[in-house]
Image (cartoon, rainbow, N blue to C red; front, side, top):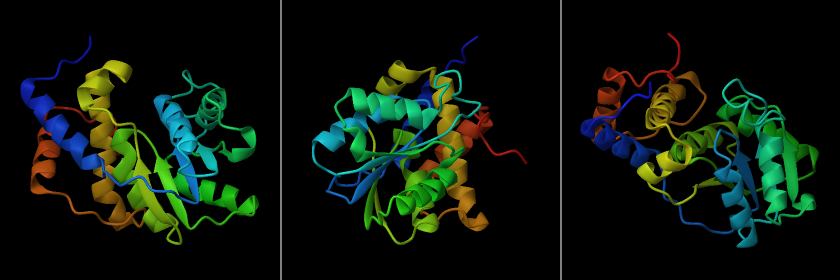
Length: 219
């Protein structure tokens, strides 16, 4: 049975949703890195930004993961690249990183792919699911300090996003898991530290208490 969100759950989820997004201004970058996940809309949005002329080259990162293997049996990066190609992105403007299992590997392994191709970007547009922006940014700043990262995600609200990808409780679980990593990963050396407003921390804590914990780190 699908878990129902209360009015308070929705209100708290909106706060966490807003926290995850950085609202960076879209400016031209040396290249883009498209982070895999269960939302193929990320690939479509990346193609749109390519056609706007924001970058000349984009790398797709993501392997086969337990969470997405049924959706993308050839791996996230492969499927995302195919979507971009169907939307008019030329093959020669793409790179493929087909092995990453998490955000840290998205950054580290993609950096190796760029290097192997003889490309050293100075600025990088990280294109991801809306609730992955902050984690992707913090990870890139730590794992690839030589580049100036910016983040972008499709301009969509939480409720509309749930309608396209749902169920709502699963999306909240994912947001809580990402926020836990934003909070905990700096002390582990995986990401830079970020300020967490009291309002976001309180919303996060209430949602954890309500049981939206399936994507949290194991103790």
